[in-house]
Length: 359
Image (cartoon, rainbow, N blue to C red; front, side, top):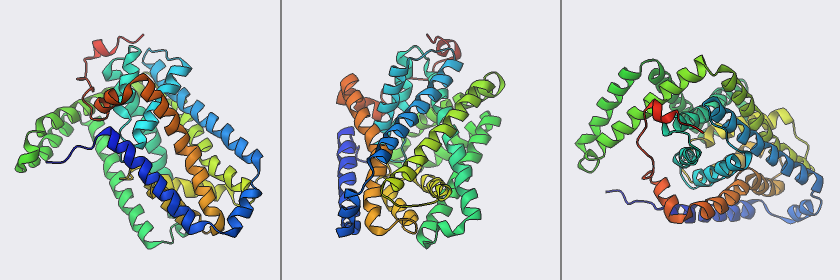
């Protein structure tokens, strides 16, 4: 049997990984020139970074509000913001950033959005991000091989690209051939029956995936047939969110008195986030810092890289995680969050009539 990893342990591992990696980064990069650069750090660029973070959060909130409104629910800005911050916290302490989805569905349900529609909102929100990352990363590498001079990183990128291609094809297949996809999933998962410790979990896993496929099919048809404008607006918010997120690194680099190409900073981050999206470590810790170091080292002097990485992670991840941790501990507490993380509170998918009761 696999030993269960509790939420408390996940939080501990995330903090431990983050602190250890910060020390490693500083140990590799800090020198006399680093302290000189720190003294010359331009505060106006840090203020600009704070402004970009606010914009980034705003577009993220607006996207969720648009998707919820398309299904008949009105969410206040404050409630949506708090829900997203809580989502960021739980996602950061789980591998591949997957832990926040049940919590976000739960938070939407608190406002009368049925589980079916809540799941579809979360699925569409995730797919919008995956589309841009899945297209942007490979396209950039195809035209700019020099961005991945490291052989290990090139192989990792190719592996993620193949995995993502399979995932996208599976999603498309599930949308257009729902029943066939469910039967295929059932056949594949029944192969797990050969392992005694997994045999009892197979029926529940099949039921969960079948429900997810049905919800994905219904939500995609609804958005593409009846909510095209809302989907387009949510896509624009996703583009704005990505732009403000990627601008943060450029602004921090400028604050450290280093001149770089804005286009190259954007291209590098498309590649980095492509790799980071499926990171097996909590919050991408280690993969994010290591990837950033390798990809940005040709552009930024080594004595600045440590400061850049720490500031970049603070603004893009740690700020949201800290805020989300405060919110989630205040609203739910560690025990209820434990249930959410283990998906015990994930209710059975409701029928469309139940899901339609949004207020």
